[in-house]
Length: 346
Ligand code: SAH
Image (cartoon, rainbow, N blue to C red; front, side):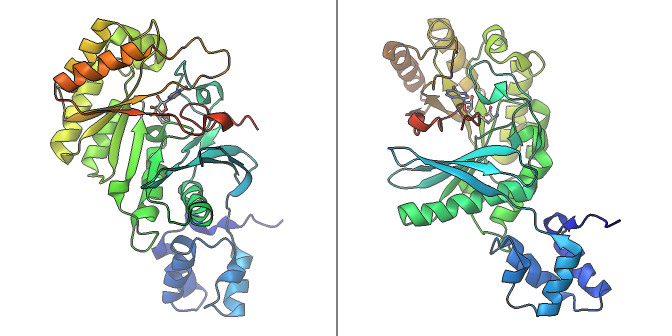
């Protein structure tokens, strides 16, 4: 029986070096292969042109390079591109390229489906099938960078972990992918250009602070009233606002990095005066800014975007309290590529 070949990208640089020593070759071949895999993002041994034919054949006999395939690509009339990404086992996730005047942002997925249950999110209706591996997250970034160069004539500038899944429920792999993306031996992107968005898992926020991560943190708050938050994000029963607050205070004390709160205003849910005051109060705990996101309707949803007046009230109360606030207009809505719409519809 043939034993299954190992995925070479599961090996560390040290392990690659050891492999070559064990087959009687030089350790530095490991460095060369590592560079092909993580700096050049290559998906086949044949393309590793500074290795001899024999070495490439040896690699071929021991390993595979599992990789993603962009299965289909949809273009929105605002320039947004959505990729349906096929994983080596046939499962599909989605990632999105969002161009603006000054930047191109990749919105990447961290899990197939999601284990959380936010009532307003299309991805929450898909069962969580599995976590993505570091290489599968890395590959999404490389694919979007290529598309950015091809269709927008410039490299990718920013990455947000706001696609499918909850990044902090796949923390180890998310961190490993960011290492490959930011490391000089990888893509060499600045961690300051990466934002990890979480629905708010206090224990993991503290862990990130302890790990002294250098990327930015966004928290999907949506309500600063426990009872309301529990209704729209039921998992918040276990991850309560006081625990979230404590973890964010811990995060800021350690990292000195401002937090972004993502917030959608819905009609009849969080558009009252007391909702606004609760948010203003919550924003006083830790230096932050608020990103008011436009609601992207999902099929049969019970949610509706609030009236402009309600959003304006939020803006003026936040501004009166010197809390920076931005309003994020949706991109890629016509192709179901906007926040919370990723549900493998195609
Ligand atoms: N699980 C992570 C990242 C994925 S969701 C998180 O919760 O942060 C990315 C962002 O889209 C979150 O802020 C989420 O609350 C928001 N979102 C989800 N569904 C949405 C919808 N239908 N309209 C607008 N934003 C939505």
